[in-house]
Image (cartoon, rainbow, N blue to C red):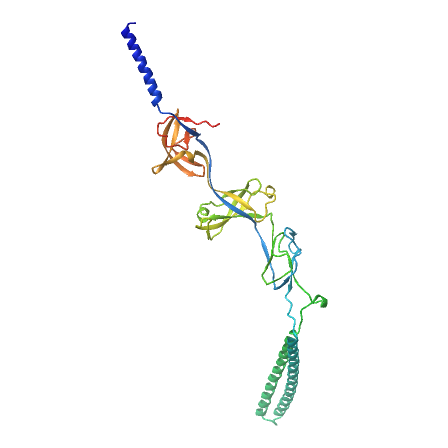
Length: 401
């Protein structure tokens, strides 16, 4: 090879080396990414809320009268039977004891009432005599009129006297009843408190209104109570329901008979179904100081009693309520889609190159969204795309160890 040819070959080789070095130096580095393969599955949109169990039928037992509630014969957890188990006894309030002055006044009132009764009886006796005389006069005048000896005017006068005497007799009889009632009232003011020694003690016995167990007791010891004061509550802990405190905006989206998963109660997940939503909401202030409209939703436990041993009245639970469910949906993780104008986009990876595609999504939950268009099952998309990633960027899957 001539000297000139050798120089040309060396020049070409040098240019190739320099070009290779420049390509290696300035070529774009593949962006390490996390990839997710699109698949089909069931998309469930849920409302998550805390709840509390309660018996379906709770019986609040109150004092029917004012008095002294004796020490309760039952304890919390005791079984009771309707109409057979005594759950409470209330002794009526005893009349107040009389001091010397009050007793003297009451005794004087009794003597006065007795004297009034005697006067009424005397007036009744006099009215009876006057009525008997008026009756005899009327009978005699009637006989004379029949014989033509007396005039009809005289008969009419005798009849009037008889009528007046009869009215006076009835009035005297009513005054006797009135005087007797006054005497009874005066004697009642002398009654003292009943004591066990005289055998007049009594109490109102309250029986269990339904089968179940004692859920709670207001006060177990003996104490004075007013009429209507709560004593204890009874219910069947096997018949439970769940009440959940929902935002009114969440409650209106729930379908009829919505399913719910009951968790965090201390055992395996249970099934429940929406029974009803209360018709009125209430205003509550959240922990952040925001006023919220909340409403109670009542759920019926579907799981049998054998699957919830130990679950009782007033236990805390956690509910996942199914608001929407779609089967055979194409699922894309929310971490793979991002806002692009008014819509959504994602980076689909094929042969080590990222391609930006427009994605139309439907309903979504906390992790996934259903794909309406733009992606298919089996596509691989970038999760958590960084600012370094662009359409056409080379990528390499990040390895985790």
